[in-house]
Length: 85
Image (cartoon, rainbow, N blue to C red):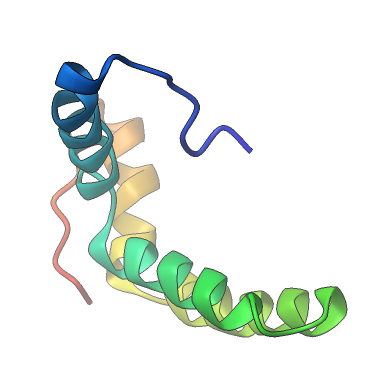
């Protein structure tokens, strides 16, 4: 899936974990929370139900200010300002 795909020596594990954490936290908080919710809930569902659940969750996210801010910031070539709304 490409979510975590690094093997590092033991002494580099924490640094690599922090690198991934920084990449994740650079994204819109509502999107990160929704992704986590979808994964956690989907683990106890069959595939069809998990996809339907993901669609419900993502529909809420796509209707937020942050969902509009991301493409706008990209078009304006600036970092996004996430508001959690």
